[in-house]
Amino acid sequence: MSRSAAAKRPAPPPPQPAPQPAPKRARAAQPSPQPPPSQPAPQPASGLASDIDSIIGHHARELSEKLQAHRLELFPPAAQKTLRPFQASEAAKLLGVNSGYLRNLALEGRGPEPAVTPSGRRSYTAAQIQALRRHLDETGRPGRRYLPWRRDGEALQVVAVVNFKGGSGKTTTAAHLAQHLALRGHRVLAIDLDPQASLSSLHGFQPEFDVGENETLYAAIRYDERVRPLAEVIRRTNFPGLDIVPGNIELMEFEYDTPRVLASGLSGAGTGAADERLFFTRLQAALTTVADDYDVVVIDCPPQLGYLTMSALCTATAILITVHPQMLDVMSMSQFLLMMGDLLSHLKRAGGNMGYDWLRYLVTRYEPSDGPQTQMVGFLRSLFGQHVLTHPMVKSVAIADAGITKQTLYEVERRQFTAATYDRAMEALDAVNGEIEQLIHAAWGRR
Ligand SMILES: Nc1ncnc2c1ncn2[C@@H]1O[C@H](COP(=O)(O)OP(=O)(O)O)[C@@H](O)[C@H]1O
Ligand SMILES: [Mg+2]
Image (cartoon, helix red, strand yellow):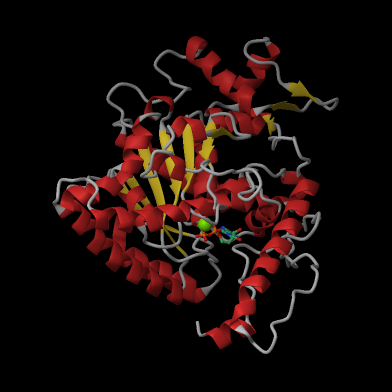
């Protein structure tokens, strides 16, 4: 951007639509987020480029303060994000048993005791659902497994969610997948590899306020002596079974450090391949130190093919490419795939591990009533065949609305929405996440 152009448009767009203060969730109405009102920024004196830094600095502070105030309204300070209770029918679905069986368990006083409303509706906390899994594993039908933890010979699954198009639904997909897998009883680690840290925000960790220096994945993969064990930067989330490594802008350091380290040939081996191994094995090495505690790792990648994304691709056992089925997005993905293909073959020659259990394209924010989108989906399926997930993720105001208050569809309550809107979104989510869960189990050799 030229300096004069920069002077005309000094404010960078926020990474996500800025939420309204204390938004009241619309019932199936398209949200129209307005940025919170802010103080006027200093105006540039006749477009002097030297003022740009102070204007942007001012905007950054203003926006960050307003967003923090908004967050404090939603979640009071010390309060951890909580998780709603799950209706008995939801619990039964998550456990894979029928509602009648669950009701009998409750009536017979076996397993955790659900909360009961005066009208007799039973609900379970997510922790109780986990406890039920353990209970059923001990007392349920022999041969049937309710706790799907991996066993000997079943390798840690590392799913990288990638695409360099921002807005293709990476973060939304990663969050819902990680939460689904946790609700289904897996031990899941989500890693926010995006300096914009939307995945962290969704889990209640505001990148500028809750994530301090050396508290992101960067801490565990940095090249200097301040490197920390990965376990030290892992945090619990409001979903039992789901932990997260939060991100913030500090992750960018890895993009600056790596070329410097490569250029200085710190490995001492003197060969290009050995030097490169220095960067792309770091994430893998860090994950190995905590692998025993998890079944699945879900990595939300930044919208670019830098060293962070490449590290994720080298560590992943599976790749999920999110694609919004519109011409511009697909053209951008085409560029992404070309670059990715080149890079991967290069890294392979340098000794990178490029064996994947699966690679799938996930159609995101799909509007089935939109002719051109449906044509694009058909086109993608004809090109990539079984590599396109059978189920697309439909566009839904329930997902978008939940996102405004930094929540996922699993966190919001059904009664906050028009039932049909919520159900349609949940059905699509269940189908997509169920399909991915099956791929993970297939990689473990389970049916
Ligand atoms: N299925 C969906 N329906 C409606 N809105 C969606 C859906 N998936 C994502 N979005 C919205 O689209 C925007 C971009 O999604 P996001 O997951 O942040 O993309 P990325 O991480 O690829 O940049 C977000 O505001 C999100 O709430
Ligand atoms: Mg994102």
